[in-house]
Length: 237
Image 1 (tube, one colour):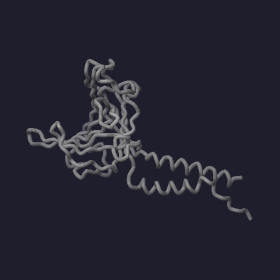
Image 2 (cartoon, rainbow, N blue to C red):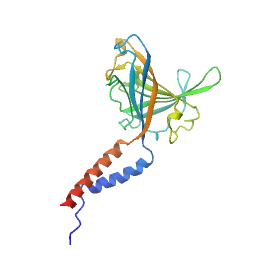
Image 3 (cartoon, rainbow, N blue to C red):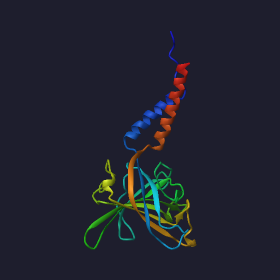
Image 4 (tube, one colour):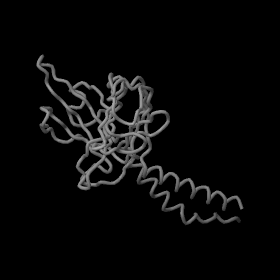
């Protein structure tokens, strides 16, 4: 009688990791927006880039709740959002990011997190308006934001995020208008504002929403696949 081959030493821990992370993944995955548009405005200063098309990618974690509302110095009410390296409690990369490309070149350094939030204000006409903002920017050593970075802004219904949590299944229909901003960032780096600040702004003309696997889940899946392949090779001998 042929004995059942023993499991590969990698298989058991990889399988356990996959099961544990599957349970975590069921709570929610990262959401990825791939978008494109056109730069429509900008300053005369800067590295000399002119109007043209851009592409971009935003990956955010909808399981992160917005912070408590607080007043800003500009008269707005902000519910902050932070992830990855911008999160004070756990400042490590977590798969969230924002990047823009112009002529196929990255505008800013590699993004390892997001800051921003929901900004709400009431105009003179009595109408309350809200913007959902995600940004990747330069930081001081203490984590405070420096001038300069890239951002994407969505106009949203104030009621959409009133609970402080992202609704399940949020689609492009919930985000009818989006714009991007570039401040002192170009050629894959942040520029010193003392050399002359610059700004470009553009309109997002199309974007696509997909689910992005979380980094930990991806690693576990790769481990499990490698262990399974090793076990199959042993069985086939």
